[in-house]
Image (cartoon, rainbow, N blue to C red; front, side, top):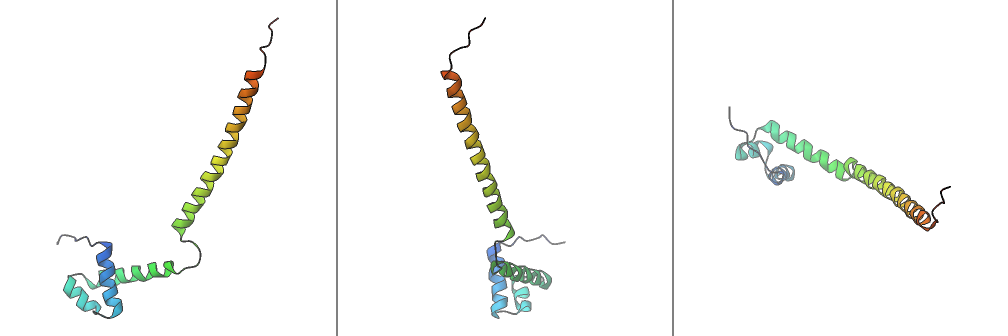
Length: 103
């Protein structure tokens, strides 16, 4: 069994673009880069799926999750800021009250 090679994303894009542009057939790329046809088909499919997402309307799922997380953190920050202001006012009020006389 041969050792698995790891291809960088840049290499994958370059090879897939060569195939899509018609610069090389899939079989030619397979022979030249010594990569199985099935793997090149998978890279091509993944590339085209990613391209669909790039042109999809709305935010991709990861961006939406980040935006939701930022909104949640901003809401929490506002809540904590209000609590801090209330605590400061209460502290000031308590400090300005004369001590109660003990009977």
